[in-house]
Structure formats: structure tokens, C-alpha cells
Image 1 (cartoon, rainbow, N blue to C red):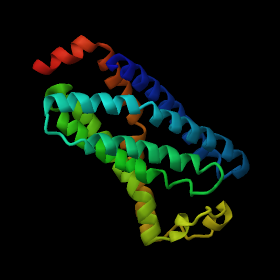
Image 2 (image 1 turned 90 degrees about the vertical axis):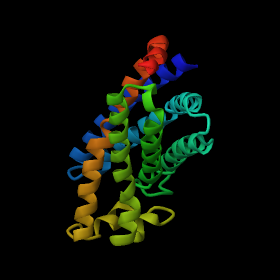
Image 3 (image 1 turned 60 degrees about the vertical axis):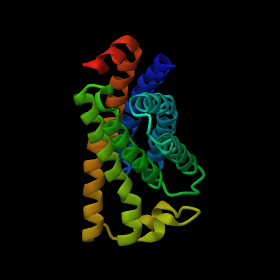
Length: 222
């Protein structure tokens, strides 16, 4: 199971890099060609769905390792990890028929970031210190991104909470130069660099570590 989780984690990382590439494409063309911009953003969404689904085996394996190291670890840690992934996937799926706003998936993704922070802290010596701290930094980045939807709804406009989602034309009429809007977009930019960009790298590294099962396990004794 550990090696399978490693393979899925590496696959998740590769797909995550592809997703990020399509996000960059979308951001670079959306102002010039809004209609064609829908194609890369939907490919991005589909890739992120796969990226997160492939993380489920990793969440299970990391929880089992933490449980062996700390028997008193609550089962809630496992549930939070899996449920946050499931809601991230669900919210992304609801983007396609425009039931939810495009950015709402960032909230459960941020919860997964919080899970990463806790899980990496709890691993102790189970993984190398540098990889543990890298995971914590990634988690913090995802949490920052995850604050955007609720922060926007509270301090800018709750229009992003509407079901079904409002049209892009309506969203475009919201002032973008307000202090709250500027701050939240700076926050999401920082979080994207810290978490969204680096999550695939971390999952590839942890996946490669899991594939070397004996090395992974015996390294915990040092």
C-alpha cells in the first residue's frame, strides 16, 4: 500500500504541475480572450480534481504512519484530510455547470492545507526534517489561498456565494481597487507561490520517499 501511495503521490504531483501550467495560460489570456480562456481554466479544474483524488492514498498512509508513531492520534485527522479532498473535488465539479463560483474550491483546499500543517508536525522523525518543514510551508500557502473566498465574501462582495454562480460580466462590475480587494489578491498571490505551485513538488518528493519503503522506514530511527 505504501508503494502504491507513493506512485499516486508522484502522479498527483505531475498532474498538479500540468494544472498550474494551464492556470498560467488562463491568467495570461483571460483579459484578451475571455471565451477561449474558459478552455484552459476548465482543463486546470479537471487536472486539480485528479491531483487531489490521487492524494487520498497518501493521506491514508501518512495517517497510518503517524498512528504507529503516536497511537493516541485521533481518527479525526484522517477524516479531515479525506473530507477536505472530497469537498475540493466536489466544488470543482460544480464549477463546470456554473453552480458554484470558480474560487469556492479554494476554501476546502485551504482546509487540506491546515491538515498538511498538522500532519507534518505530527510526523516527527518519520520523514526528514527538511521535507516536513517544506510540507508545513506548502500547507500555510494553501491556507492563505483558502482564506480568499470567505474574505472576499465578507469584505468585498458576497456575490461569489450565490447559487447558481453569477456570470463573469456581473463579477467584472465589482470594483477591483478597494483596499480589501487588493489585499486579498495579494494574499492569494503569495499563497499560490507558497502552496499551489509547491504542492506538486512536495507530493513528488514524498511519493519518491514512499517508493523507497525500507529507506523511508529505517530513516525514522535516525
